[in-house]
Image (cartoon, rainbow, N blue to C red; front, side):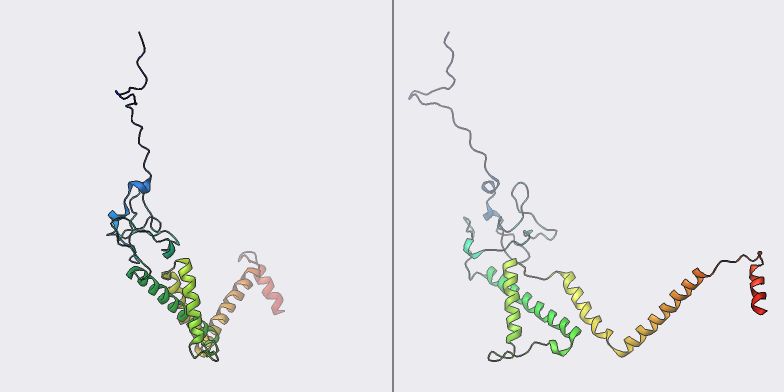
Length: 225
């Protein structure tokens, strides 16, 4: 008896077997346009290149319900992506303008903080000076522009809270350490500490005498003689 054909064919002689569909990738399974209602803390809409995703490709959210941004990720104008059903974002889009303003604001805060810290440590000689032929605030403006470019390249739009707190406390404490009253109190504290440490060292060098041995009385008699 003839064996049945491995592949069934229709009347035209072509195989009726359908090839199995290729597995879809994670990016193909998830349509970013479905998540354009979500945004990160900077107001940027969902973009798989900028934001973290779960194993199934869905956006990963923070405890506040915001998109979780990848470390160092930043939107690139030359590689901007437009998804079907999502509005395109050009160079003058509100999101990019807002992010650019945050870079500028962070740079201004950085320069003002560093200048305050420098003046606290070194005095008024560390104030920003006038640049000949440019203007009074030219030196300050040069620093702001340099920091702004750095933040844009690194994708940093805000300073860490711990850095702001540390600088604020340093600018408060360091100038007051040079005050005369603070120096006087610090001198008293050092003297008290030195006496206490010296007393403890002397107690360690002194031999321990037993009250029943009589050595203490003999030593006292020798001193009196």
